[in-house]
Image 1 (cartoon, rainbow, N blue to C red):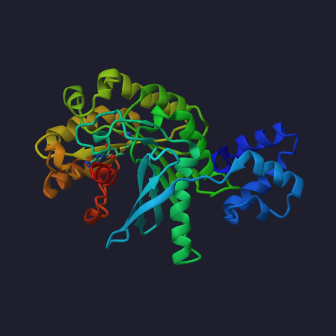
Image 2: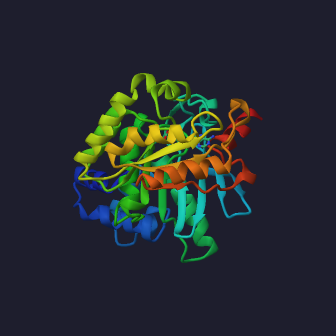
Length: 347
Ligand code: SAH
């Protein structure tokens, strides 16, 4: 049976038409699901009993079950979700001054094999469906509402385990769903999709006509080092990646991507590297988000010293590149990418 949470708004309109109903049904159902948070068709009292019965025979309210929830002293919450087939994924809620962001996983495990990342310790088993991604957001939305009726998830980043452009259609259905004004109504500018650099996905994303942010995990200023960190660079080296980002900028009407750059001690953190990075990215109009490496025991890489990160940051700013240093969350609760699931999988 298909989950009713698995439809983006346009998909649900299509579905209602195919059942001989008017498109308006989608609006009614969305309001019940996402504004009133009901979890049964019988509560949808503006829909006739006969059609409610038909809905019941076709769809359920499946979302993954939250099995572990760890709350950090700084307000970060990390959860593990178990799905129908027993597979598990993790996601994180982060409390910023401007709101609450959920970091969503898009796959069970990951095949990208980045040298510094814990997610890839477990290989990809399958893609997540749209409802499995949405369920992660709904779970935190309900968690916040329980604390205070006025709190809700305000930002969504697809930066958890998995490569979103390796699961393109489901990710797009999911982000359209959270973005829908009839649904969770999270503004496109509050949604970010992060890719390791899958060029066809970047080009396709630029033509979607969405205002959703794109982040590119770059992490090195040249092919030699990017090859060592990220196997995907063999398939899409910088000479392909950078032009694709320039094309994305054109196709999307001037949307500027954010380059994520993980700071690894004595590997990619010198001023010479900052210069190289600047030369590489200035034609793209992109921003830079510097990420102090969250060291994963199995990987043996170290985090750059704060002074190095600051100097790198100041260099980029001096060249007119808007850049930030990522704030760290939940270091007391295994909050580095993929750490929680890996820990439970090892047990
Ligand atoms: N596959 C996508 C999204 C998941 S990774 C991508 O590659 O962008 C999300 C971000 O977290 C990426 O920028 C990734 O490089 C970064 N990341 C992974 N492991 C990390 C670690 N140990 N420390 C800091 N950042 C990490």
